[in-house]
Image (cartoon, rainbow, N blue to C red; front, side):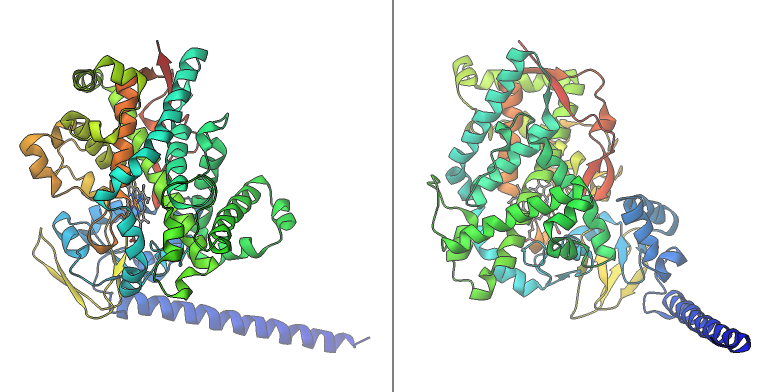
Length: 520
Ligand code: HEM
């Protein structure tokens, strides 16, 4: 046994080491934070000092409070003006006139690798960082969803809308409310999986209208907010044996299983070498990607899995949430409902409206229907994230359109803007929270188009916009052209409005969802 005096000496020595290490860490942290606040090339950009000092500030609002940093950023703009430093590395701009300048096809900007690391889907076109690499990867998918492609896709859309209408009829007969929040997202998942992967999901056929899958997307998206800050959380989950994940509870297990299902689709594409399997008589996107002249490293399992995961997520949550917003506002505004129904009734013979699914082709020319969809896209803002871009070649000068003051932004700095701030700006859209389709009719439309950016702008704008528009017109056209529906008891606006920014807008956790009754 060591003598008493030598134990004390050892204790003092180890305490001394701990104290020295702690002191060194504190000194380093203070020096680093002081450098970031007072000496970094971004120190002249206004904003809260804590946000400039450390990313833990954002972590608190983003990962702990779950998608609440957007509210802080709004407050920062109110206090500090149109440009603010929101992290040690990133500036955020709220100046509508600058939107088209930042998100401009003529500019070769990269995405911010940190921000887009959120889902660990770097193989997808969505999360591809480098502008040239993105151009290479996105060519096949962009072709697939061109404006002209919608007539090719229309029979697939009609098949799934027929299931949607049948499920509505069943609810009418059984006098049961229909959970549209789930049904809409599942409709969108069924369409995008039919078009893009070997095995379609057919969620609308399930008893619960695909509620389990909707929950998966929500949980996965929220869970991934931590991944952005504590890198590799998602990768660790996927590398963990299933039984160990199971010990963490049903939510991680459901996420794990669904991600494995997405991977299995990529395996099927590779094993069949892009040849169709099953009964699909139309080209499937991921098979087209596999058969394309992209280099072999663009066709490996991880890259195809990433693309599939993003197509399913991007193609469903955004579209489903927008359908939900449009439907709620039409039902909550009887004069709008009346005008829309009149337009639909005057456009089709009663037989057409009753027997068949109203197709995109017949709905597309209707002005009031289009105006309702456009206004819903504005209010829903299907992407609430802040979309940071980086100019890695040269610095940027941002000049405030309000004060004329110029700010130097060094090259390599993530610069972000938020579509929502454009769409909810009262100078551009008076009474911005009001659902008012008239904004999109006649001359008003010409004036307002300039400030509409639901699908983003520039070279990284939405590849699925033609598909999304077709789905939105068909859902609103069929729901109100073929059925009489009303909001179920207790449903209000707070059930469909954004409460969390998880890149996509998510409603409050105790939302009742958009439930409607289908009337005779
Ligand atoms: C109302 C529905 C939709 C809205 C509001 C919407 C909005 C957007 C926005 C704003 C972006 C740009 C994101 C960024 O800058 O990081 C985007 C990108 C994207 N969207 Fe959509 N989207 C919708 C539907 C769809 C659909 C149906 C698909 C299915 C194909 C889709 C697939 C994608 C993909 C793959 C990207 C990444 C594009 C790229 O980086 O090249 N979206 N979407």
